[in-house]
Length: 334
Image (cartoon, rainbow, N blue to C red; front, side, top):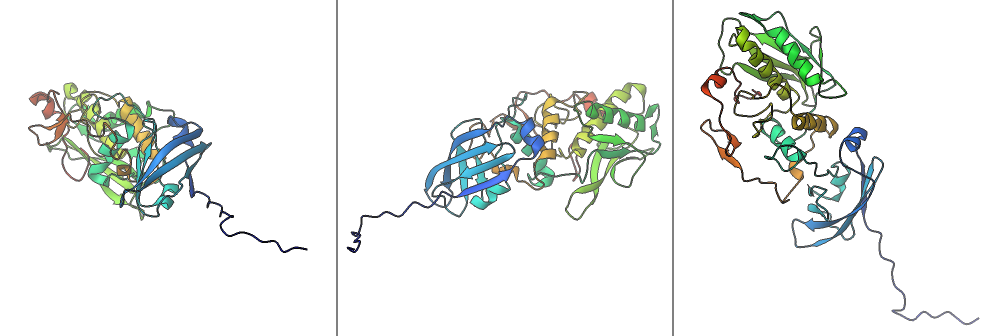
């Protein structure tokens, strides 16, 4: 038998398989966002060098998988070929398993380019832009007897709970006797407070999640004419209690920052943000999304006489409205 001779240079090494990283969506997250099965093209861009390359995102059921040929091990930004997705910044490819890709979901407000941008505005002041959670749902709400002149504040709080619970298939809150956690109204009889209502986190668990919040109220709302403002203000505070801690630039939102709220019930945008935070992983940094995307800076933000940002061209609340409204101060939401 003749020996087999292989000529040098005639063989080629097979290319190594492209790195892949997989993760899972929460089941309700995928069901509630415009996420469909299939494969989409992306570009990965290294942040420490000019290196870049093609990437693919494949979604099957609740699973997503990144294919990243030639990707470096350090930080990078993933930019979608289609505007349906938000760009995504991570410290390295492995982190993609814990950081789900998110679509660009439109909202009603003209002040924010998409749902995640509004969510980021709400969680930045108190939670540094990271997703907060309650330990369980629904959150208990309770109150002792609390009467201010002609206004039963406990009944007003119960109405505010009903306004939020009417917005979705699952309740956000449950009215109950005080179970030792959740949200509790504290009435400071005989005092006129500025702001009239405020919310504070008074206890957390070992994961940093709130386990007790207190809504403080004085006797600002003490007449039948003031009662609707009390309900509206308490609904505003419950929005903060859903961990939408900041304020909105949109006067059509219940959490508009130029207090008092001009609407009597939560907007569809605010309900969508509260739902989104409930589905995303605890501690997820929303600052990772939309990096450099068009429309991230709307250019409509100005600083008004109160020192807070507001929508350019929006009319400030009247002095009479402000006397019965809420205001943005303190560590708490207001």
